[in-house]
Image (cartoon, rainbow, N blue to C red; front, top):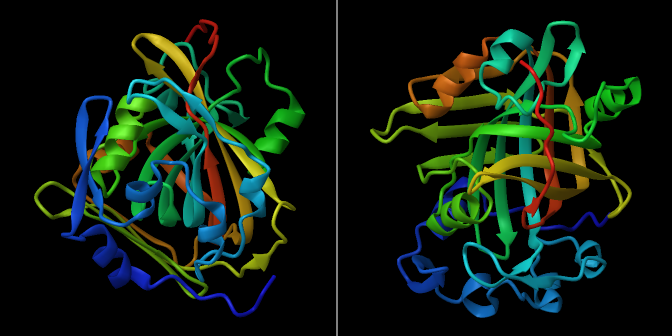
Amino acid sequence: MSSNRQEPGGREAGRATAGLKDTVEADLGGRTVKVPRGGLYDRYRMDTDLDEVARDPRVSGVDFFRKLPKSRVDSRIGPTLTPNFYYRISTARLTMLARSRAIRARLPEELAPLEVAPGLGLVSVMFFRYDVCDIDFYTEAAVGIAVRPARHGKLGFLDLVTGLKNEQLDSYVLSLPVSTRIAQVRGHEGYGFPKWVTDLDVEVNAQRTTARVATDSGGVDLALSARTPKQTAFPSGERVGSLTSYTSIDGAWHSTLSQTNVLSAGTTRSARGISLEVGKGRMADDLRSLRPIRTIQFDAMTEGQLALHMPVPTSVPSRDK
């Protein structure tokens, strides 16, 4: 991997991008949102010129996306192209143990927790920074639950091992705040995710990982501070993971696939030096309701890419609690 990449402009650059006053209006299925004038969405409406993106010094390359042709689909946000491409991202995730009883209380009856041992499941707090993507810069955070694949019956050993290696995961999200209106409308109306707009800062670099999700009043909802795990670089396409998220849209179950092209990432199973502030807000309430016992893993990706597909109908069999 090239050693002369230009790092993203950092938190202040992100704020400046997210807070641009020079905006234009865009229609998403009858909903009007403002987007940066001259940004990728303003110019391309999801049909982004990959050659132009490749010239962005923040982007390592676009070969991953050339192998994923887009298709036009009708959706609740109007006609759109899928997948949504994220050309440079960084992420952080805290994975925690929690009692299955508490998890089941927050899951729809059709879904079941992924258990690492009888009575113990996995929950996570995640933070995302999207520096270059089809709908322009934004940040995001999530409280999620690892669930069994919806079409599986009894969980097999290989399913569990694969999930814990973060290569193929299934999840149900309780809260998913974002920093821009276009991300909120697309995510809530188009995908069925529990999204709202708030002040949200995320910074993941080789030394430190910090994130702060604000409440409506400006207080702390969730905040993270940690030393970034040692990073390992991967050639594009060598390590591609997938996440399937389940949502109910208009009373029908859908699954949403996201594919992550990992370029630089690291993991630690030590909680030393990790500080998670659980304040007073929607995310904090969701996390407390899961009654996490302890953190068992911290993953940070300082550079990656993502393809987010539109949701598709799926069959989710009923399960007893």
